[in-house]
Image (tube, rainbow, N blue to C red; front, side, top):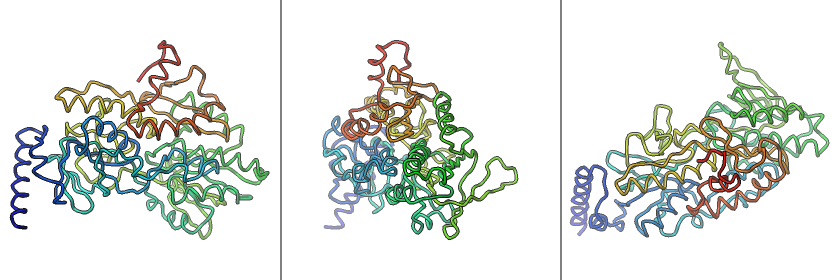
Length: 458
């Protein structure tokens, strides 16, 4: 009996491979899909496979699950919890709890999609196939990669040890460490409070400095500000990439006596002596400088996940190589990607994912129907730069750094209303709109707010 099953599987594999070659990555008939049943736990075949259960993966699976029906879409994600990571800045400042940012993964993944609770560890796009962490082979007609980013704390010498042993070292980018931030901000009485930004692309780049402003406010409210030097040590050469908002932030740091050290990259933490070593990126000799710290908020270097970086899907820099406007892969026409793992040259934010999803759903649908990708993503991204417990600068911009503001007011100013959007409205849009494959960014709202006149739309 076992031998007969094995023979049927072998024949099925050969037939699927041959048909894929004949069809040139086209659709596989439902007869073949059913003949290679998932009950064998060796091979599964789907119309669409989505890798990653973050914002982009959930939105994509939800939309196409409705379009294709039950049993045709699979989402590969090993985690038990899903987090709205944009809330973690507020968690670190004591304004939200970690639990408010999290949901069981089972509650956010669409019920009409098959959840494969594993990781994708090997990609074979030439054969429309991938392999999971248990060794299961998954074949697909179409693939969407939404694998997110990998946090590389181990690339900074001593940082992991410091995060585990020193209560005054924290990081809002990881659920294991974000709950350390507020107690550490409350505990510091004097000395250097250092906040860092690494020399790699990161998700929600503004979060690295949001906690600077919130932390400085906590020190003022506690009456310890005059004894604490607040330092923002960033690898970048500017405080923010869009000048309209950068001008506001430069004024804020000047008025609040926050010292910004540009082109400083954290390379080592010495928890025993409470010292942080920074590479001076503009030094031709590779010089470093050392700061003592009483508080250290560290943002780790980041990359696409190792399994993605080692695949044929990435470019020379290790990012999934997609066309910047269509989100379709540059080599494999039945592969799309969105979110933080991609080569898209824009800020890696949930707001960007929402707009990317709106483009991807149209273009992937067109390709499935044998048509060309026609919808274009213009790089829209947004960063709600929280500068206090009731203040926020809502930055919105495109690939070229041009502001794309939704509201008919100057969003470069600190506003109470924008903080309310960040703290209360955006989480609802995320959980009840984006994750369900409904919300596609604020383009429609922008058009209404500006009566369709004079504003660039995405």
